[in-house]
Image 1 (cartoon, each protein chain N blue to C red):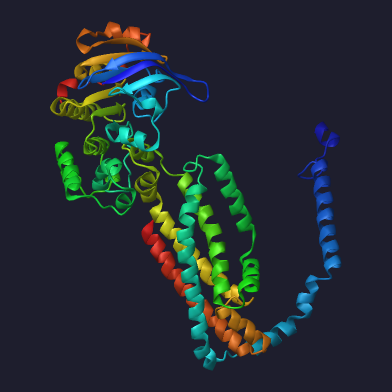
Image 2 (cartoon, each protein chain N blue to C red; image 1 turned 30 degrees about the vertical axis):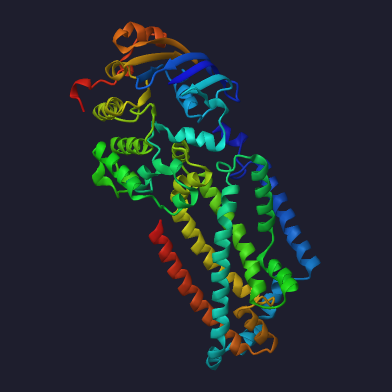
Length: 266
Length: 259
């Protein structure tokens, strides 16, 4: 009973912890306010301008179904771009994946160089690649394909070189001991171990390429994105919403097929 | 004939794998190398097909110093030396047939082998060798569907398909149970006797060494500490090689079952 009088706990946390929490909260909120003031963007605007949003959405409806006929050629161009880019990227990435795998490429200078190049490629967003190639080769699907190839090689080599680094190296020793050369060792001891993942990643990159090629069209790199860009500029919003719906359906179907195929592989 | 002349090997991390080895192994011998793990058995055996390269001395295979070989010549040497591993080292996702035919890679052009083009004779040879180790019914099974003993038999068939003059086996039975171990050793012994292929086997089971070897070489700390016919070897000899008394784990047992 005596103790009660001498010490009363003042909450669930020590005073020091509470003080740190308070200071952190003040600092973080201060940053929010500062950021908002400097960029002149306030969350409240979202609510003030809600009528505009409904207005714009209203412009998009109803979709112009008569426009569908014009979408197909460009949509197929997008799919063709993705197929060509993925196929070439897969072929290109095979040797580079091997060179970027530490257990295959024992020369550390080449290995480090490959890693360095790969990191550079992967820091460039696909849309920037597209802008650059549209500048170089002009507006159209070709620029888009080149951009997609570089983008896809960056992803594939990264994923594949990590798979290669995780394989069982014992069979490679066995193949070397039979007198097999480097290429034979790769094709007999390494390829069978990585083939299922390689095909799976290739399909995955194909899915990514379909979506990416839609976006690339916005900067003039061919395909259905270019069509969206054109109709937005003409403020033909019902046509835009038709395009978006069609793209959505097609992408979902392709992703579904690809996912099923990949499930079957692994 | 294989001859080690003052062969030493120091690994890049400073470990001494082999210390001034001098020994001759004659054509057709069945040699078992015994020693504790880390004694240099693996390094010894892998020097012969240059999976590791000794840093000093000369290693003669049929009077050629193989330590100087590079590239194509080295691969040519390896085609004549078959190797069997503790973990079988099959490509698990490939078929038994593809694993066995890979014994022909040293004889086959790169492009032909990449497209799996092998002659009728070579395919027949692979099949006959599978028959020899009684596993021909698994021809088109994937290697990972087989038990350990079956996988080791497939790896023997792969080695035979190389048509080697010499077979090296690095702890071939360490991952197997006693009956299967004896079965694998019997196949190796039988091949040695029928085909007169020189066979060098690393083992750490003393009872198996005595049972199968013509000649036993004992190693400790990278040096050869015993060399003599198996008939002269007793447990006492092993105690000297191992530098300690013999324990139950040094024996495989199950010899009387006879596979």
